[in-house]
View 1 (cartoon, rainbow, N blue to C red):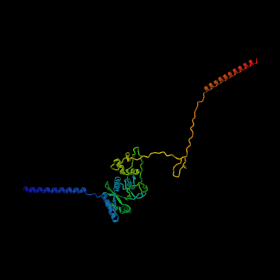
View 2 (view 1 turned 120 degrees about the horizontal axis):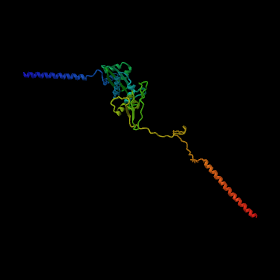
View 3 (view 1 turned 30 degrees about the vertical axis):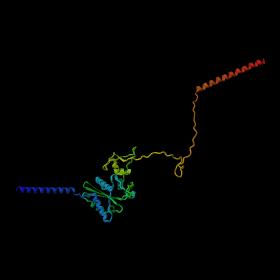
View 4 (view 1 turned 90 degrees about the vertical axis):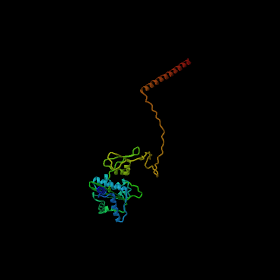
Length: 332
């Protein structure tokens, strides 16, 4: 009997352990089961399968395009708006350049890039999104363009909806980013921040104004978003009005120099060097000023003149009488 009880207890323990294992397994499967909405890589795989069907090379995944696409997906989810315009109205070309992507092509025409966006119920799959894009030539060309070579994708969920984005582009060969000259008629309007000048330490500090974004500031100063985030220890793209961002450091300040100008615009040589006329130095003239004599001084001068006149007259008179006396003696 004890042995039967032992077998019974062993059987119950075994069944309990099997039940717990099954429950744990079911719970793990429930936690690991992917949601209906696809991932960014599901989007990329679906696009590359489409390219293969058109006998085209698959797109290469680019980390910057992954970043811009995910940022746009999150922006659409946050605003509940399906749009190609990013924060502050920034267009695709400027978003790619601000993120540091070396975009090829004529930037005045937007460069070689394209973007597909869509949204739907959170159960909509990535494959469904790609199939939806194939229904019109513009979106289809983004996915099967022979002129583009790299891709990035983004997925965001909010309020029961899923937002899908793919950014496709062609980089320049040397791998260096170009400046932004996007046509405002093609891209969304962009508010340009007022640029700050370097301080005495060579640092450029920008004060964030209302409705400004990192995208706009990076484009205005011709730096990347990552540069600004690194200099300011930012971990996301959130900035706030009134905060001050360090944009550049060790900027060399221009030194002022005095340049002599010719006396006449026509006095230029063939090489553009001004010819200055010879300078004749004038002699130095020293002017000594004397005070104007006063009336008292004039009066004293007049008295002195009279006295001298009387003295002269007396001397002459004395001489005359002496001569006259000597003449009388001679006559006698």
